[in-house]
Length: 134
Image (cartoon, rainbow, N blue to C red; front, side, top):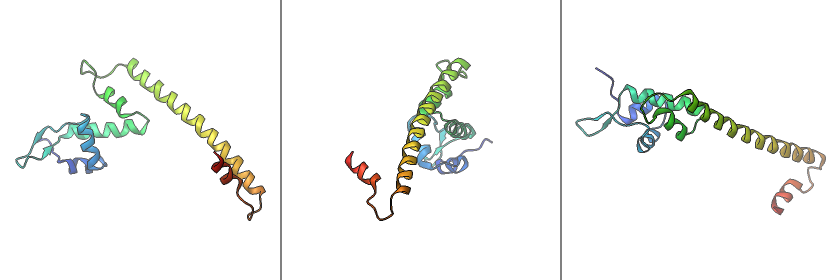
């Protein structure tokens, strides 16, 4: 007999909060297979596999929208390499932009720290003064 999980059991097995499972259900990423006699939603092994896939895909940078498209194509088949390649290229471009922004923030913070080292500890902090002026 296949395994059946309540929301809390499924969440625990997947290592995520039950609220996340409920959210994924609302956005139709997972759906219960059936209901118990007490009207509890019951999920099977397929839902657990899907949650594990979602976690793995998020860990490498895919958004929930990306994951929706990875999980369902119009034909119901596995997406083509071409469509997945476009998603990967988009995520890589996003990451490159974030890295560029982070490098800028690092330069600004290093510069501010260098100025702090040059000032006396009792002097008024120029960093705070500059931030207040903006």
